[in-house]
Length: 365
Image 1 (cartoon, helix red, strand yellow):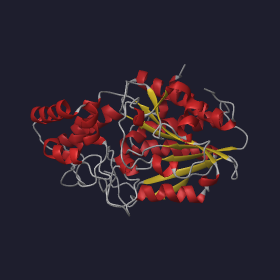
Image 2 (image 1 turned 180 degrees about the vertical axis):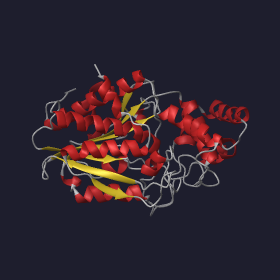
Image 3 (image 1 turned 135 degrees about the horizontal axis):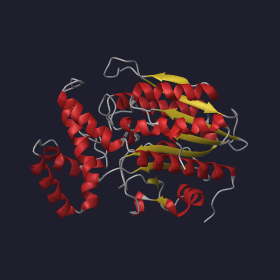
Image 4 (image 1 turned 90 degrees about the vertical axis):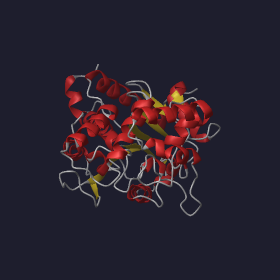
């Protein structure tokens, strides 16, 4: 079902991923560079790229985002490259009056360094809050912070298990991953001000007047949920136009963190919320989350990465660094052919459903 050539879209690192995207993008359009200030581990310059395909005044737009969590952009880029290949080959076409906006590697620094966060330690998917208001409080994170940085894995796991026994598994996951705004060195830090990528998203929304169009936004992620399955996560409120649109387009596959039906718990400051604010009743934002391994393993590899970077950039070639980075790669970017085939099959399916929805020919509940 997925030929071997398509698996070449899964490239090994930031440079190869970016080179491939640019080659595919230039075959069908004109990518625009959005450089970032910080360099990669070999001193290489880094950039996000945006690409607009289709009519400039199209009333409907498919928005496909990769690399919100940097290391996860290796998979997101493969999905984008696969779509570009299909468009160039003519095996897929955009519906009439529909355009596509791709944002390639929203957090390129995280892709290059195999991290989820940006150079300031900010998790972009916790950064979209109103910073003119008091920052959200996460008392659970404060209670667990010392344990999270404990190098003794047995003691750390005991502390987390004790918290889960006392308050429940959902409360434990929210405490760790729901978003915290007090500890820049810690995981899932939402920042104290808008990150550069936050500004880029709002710039693109204004530049393309996306608040005046019908939107199908798909943000590509990995690492949470069953192995290889692409979960369609909808963080619109359960009784909202956005959720009803998502369910109309994607059917019963849609899961809702706010309703407790998702592998994801409710979170602060999601990228989704910036898009929710500009969307009309016939638009929606979903996260397409490709599962890998357990949530407990996810926490362990992320915490190891934060301990590694706690005092600044590590020696990229040191054995300890390489071990932590390999664990990050293995969890968020499995190299198995079976997993890659599942990603491409599901991403093609969900993109088609989104395009059918925009064209008004999609699923009806």
